[in-house]
Image (cartoon, rainbow, N blue to C red; front, side, top):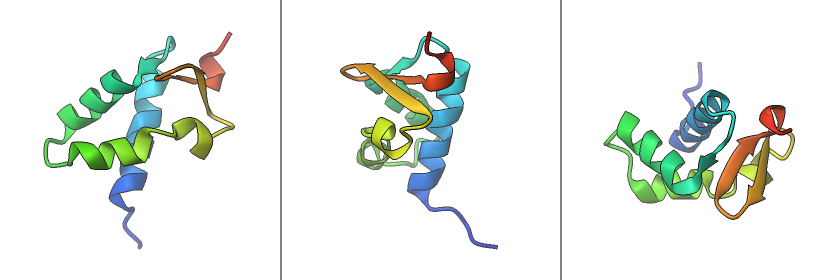
Length: 76
């Protein structure tokens, strides 16, 4: 069984968090929550994993304004 890379785990956590927040999350809040779940992760690693979630998951994540991520399933 192949273990997931740290980047993939961070992105999956970001998607889980966005599911919990129907109004979306600002980039800095999303980063802070992920960091709070695992203090061993370097904040720069989190940044590189989530800054372009809308481009990585165009069918799941929308970025209606600068720094705001929201799931398409929650978008009005």
